[in-house]
Length: 418
Ligand SMILES: *Cc1c(COP(=O)(O)O)cnc(C)c1O
Image 1 (cartoon, rainbow, N blue to C red):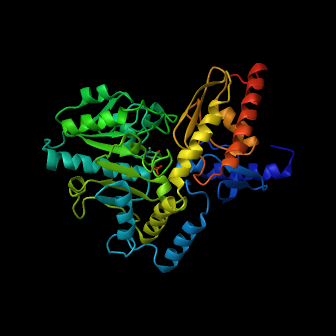
Image 2: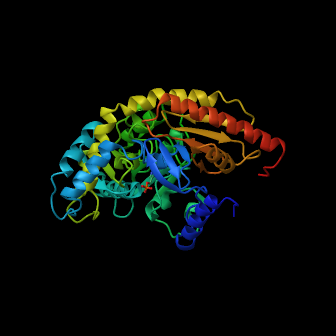
Image 3: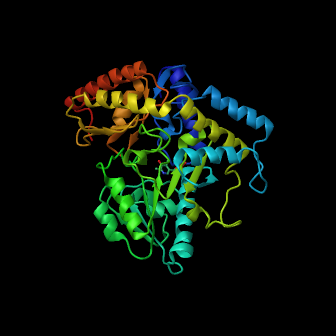
């Protein structure tokens, strides 16, 4: 415990939380009490630049006035009625989402994982009812290193030992192929394949960007074999990569699309599974649902989140400023850094685990006022709110550079034993 009594306040808060909260996360030792725009503050009033954006859930920035207004106005009018009744808010939201993404219909859920489950259910039912696969034979192909959430269905697709260990038995009918290898996809397809589920860029795997042409080739293979292409854009979507959807970089229009995170404007969990009519029409009343999914409150916020992306040209900002951020990160020359990758305002810096752990880097960045988190043991993610200003990126780059130098010194004095 620190000598500084204000430090003890944070320590006390953390202790209290740890006593009662399941230890399914290992948060950085900072207690956030307030946020606005790209900044957050801890209990001592210390300011941080948020370069994490809650895994892209806060792409619009914290407490966006337009989104907070949509939330509070709708909360006062009517927030939750369940889908047992109609509301006047759902259609405008889904119309907008379909128009912007080129999809025909949408099914509203809350979290990303639920929308993934929805996509899997849709694909299986489509395989039986439309493609003619025999009962219980449908297969889903997913990629090595994927992240599709934490539900049992999503975990059944995972290749991450820790995400699976202790949670079996798993849903059958899953085939795994290496990521960024379209030939492997084609080899894995059988007459029973319902769908190929893929992230255009693998976020949790460490911002893994496949070679150009990969997704377009997957789309062509899926079309030829009558396999649904389901694209999980929960993290990559809604401007994060400099296009509204990451699959636009490859001019791919998927059969089904999964959105979440930023769709809730940083205020609420709002997710959608969107698809072509033929796929969505396999759902009949009673087949699938969610108590809160598509509530008036979620719909009002989701609509405002989509409107704000356009009104504030956040997608274009992400493209422009993302290049600036990526160039700045690539300019940091250090033996600790193995690779810098990314697209739009979504960058991963891959540190050499033989020299330093990404966790140590994240802790040092925190001390310099930059909030981010390691993903796996080696990658630091930089994904600021899309409203970030160029000068704020420069401010961050300076501190990131200083942090890397500090880490080099750490390694030289071998204080860090990996
Ligand atoms: C975060 C994420 C999910 C899961 O979303 P939750 O809201 O945490 O359930 C699914 N897919 C991808 C690609 C994600 O990044």
